[in-house]
Image (cartoon, rainbow, N blue to C red; front, top):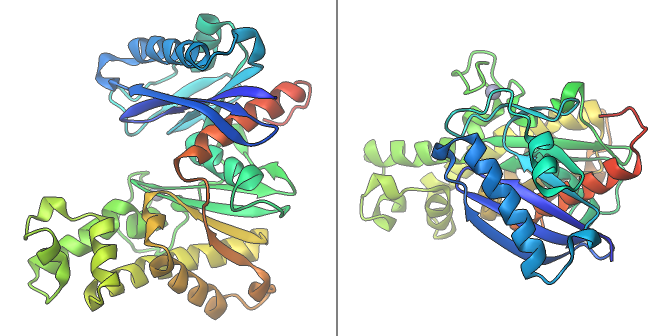
Length: 329
Ligand SMILES: [Zn+2]
């Protein structure tokens, strides 16, 4: 066995999994509420307790664990092991020394990685991205995260900031994104963006199943509800997914002509819509990409579900541990 711990720092829950990297199996997985409002010091103590508790309750000794990876939903300084900005957690964690603090509390080597890059790396090594040297991943949920594996290396860019596929400009004159830019993919294809299109259709009084499915309680409209309406033949709901998928397709076309991946993996909660998203993505790239062999590119759904991040960040920790002298971040 080749044992590492993968940790997911989420806005709602902290999750820790014992991962055997020889087999790609998650042997044990535990989770506790993040309770981010208590502040980063309390969250980091809870995370350290969760890591040690998960190792112990799974029946392993700490000495059997080679290292720990932590997936973080935000901007990191990978060189210094700092959290710079977490848009979805209270307090936003400015300049918090997460790597050093956790390493000090649990006495194991610790490495950080952006959560969408962790999903990308997990899907490439163990999931839907297996078998290709170059892959792109869109992680579509509350935001649109992304990542790239290029020539078998997770691409990180400056300080780990490369691979933000959701923040490429799709419409130069589009509305403002949470990142400050205008017209990012995230504005058009995130879970909240899809939900907003469904809410708008109901408010405008269009004939659509979306309203019926939630008894006209607008707060209950989700991307899953809209997908259900689309599957029942609702054309408004189908149009919403076609539009979101077309925008993801435009973004994918940009990646195909710039990076040339052999696979594009669609991950995150919104990917549960399946072909409702994949069909317009595939259609759009065939329409727009002419200067590379687009017919050979596979656009597929992620296969590891919620384990992708834990597996990916554990694998990242193993790679960092084995190449400590390589000066790539
Ligand atoms: Zn943006």
